[in-house]
Length: 214
Image 1 (tube, rainbow, N blue to C red):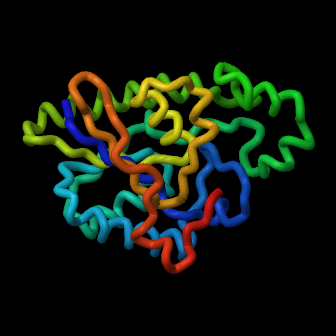
Image 2 (cartoon, helix red, strand yellow):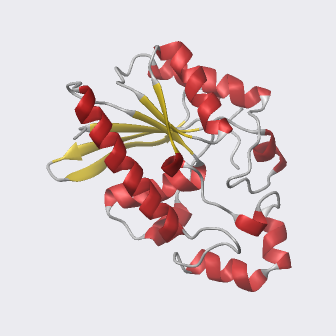
Image 3 (cartoon, rainbow, N blue to C red):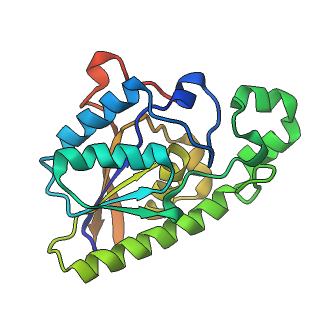
């Protein structure tokens, strides 16, 4: 079992810049997002990471590949690290969703078991990301690296849900956690629980004003 887990969000995408929900639909990294990913990789080059695990969506995979160029690490793709499936809301801003479908939106933000229409709930994603962590633990154990220190490159909501799961918090808390593009988060294992060492750290790029929240 790894003693430390590093999690990073993908760089800014064209859809992030537009302010729309992406979910399982894909959007390329913007020029800002590519620069964020490059700075992320340079930051992580000194972390002694063992392997990179990323979502199969291209925005996370591209970010992971850019980080790999800076760290010379292997990239392993896992479907379970994908963002929440937003179903019918993909490609629409959440402000628009709030006005078009207020009841469904209200139920979704208050009930973690309520899925987006045609998509997933927070509870669904929690099952997936926990399964991903089991897979990562197994692959790191099989690799025999001591100590294992994997990097996970995933998505805003998926990371917030993963954090709630790692820390044993209610899923509702995920809605109150900020996660910027290309942010770094560090979790450490203490005895039989995880503790949070660093959250939403964008010091590697935020000084140039590119820390867009989406």
